[in-house]
Length: 410
Image (cartoon, rainbow, N blue to C red; front, side, top):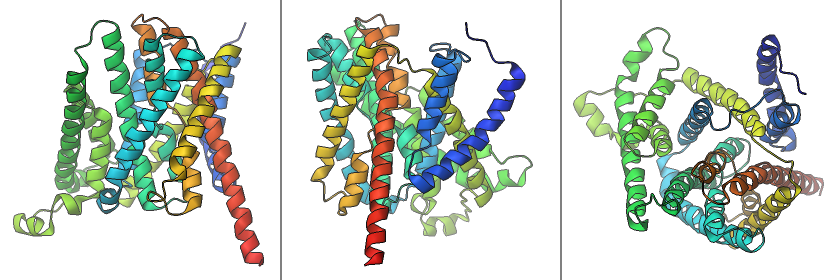
């Protein structure tokens, strides 16, 4: 019978996790071993393995924490995107996101139906749940990989769009399969309107905040005022029925690209003084994202169940299929990434994360047949896909370093 940890030890462990995170990040920079994988393993060890932490299973607290993690990470990713790079990246990102996701859905659905023996409905739901590139894994990884700004923008947009499409897709399909749907057409229209409205709200909020930020910064104890407004904007956007995640991304993009939102002629004529984040605020935000990432991936590890060999085998088979799909997809994409090393690196980015973890339990909650199987397989694919991504990135980095040493030696 596992013993629960005492509160003083939990408090100490939270502090120790901060230092462990910095050690893992340093190892990532040196050896290209993504720091998220040891965090997930740690979560699994203190959760399902040792029983020290017992997840509440879809509680309100867990949903809020997951949602806040996605919102802040996407906002941070948006701050790194310049519109000049996005102009060249928008169409390729749409091509990669929707093209890649469509192939993933088809292949995973086929495997789930003919290999897993599931119904077409359960198979399709699993395919949609496992289709996207996880923003909560990919965006933190991008900070440590040597990719061109254009490819970084493509992957950021791909992961953000993928997460939204997956959440909307699973909820819509599960509702339709449960008899609560309203048809495919209204679902598509609702998704597009949600996307456009969220973009408008996020950009408008960025414009407003840039005009009042100078006054707010003069007040005391407002270092996290921007993050507080971010939560307000994302929450209200979601409450209005639109995508809070896309609203958060647009808010970050808007603050990063104020010169495009407000032309200089308009600023001078109206005597405006738009301001972005200061260096101190950027540093605080980066630290907040770092801490949030630590706790999120440990939390994700506590959600994983690896006690069923058939489920594990299915998860490994699906992960292998996802690797083959992405490798084949990017093999001939010279227009996206002229350098073969960059294409190879991007082709190994297949991790599944927050969006998959959130929607994987929806079919079970709705009482759909195969719901438990969908959840367990998705939870198996998440750590396996991150492990494969970690190994692929590390091996490519070491091979590139060896080639560079060979060239220097010659």
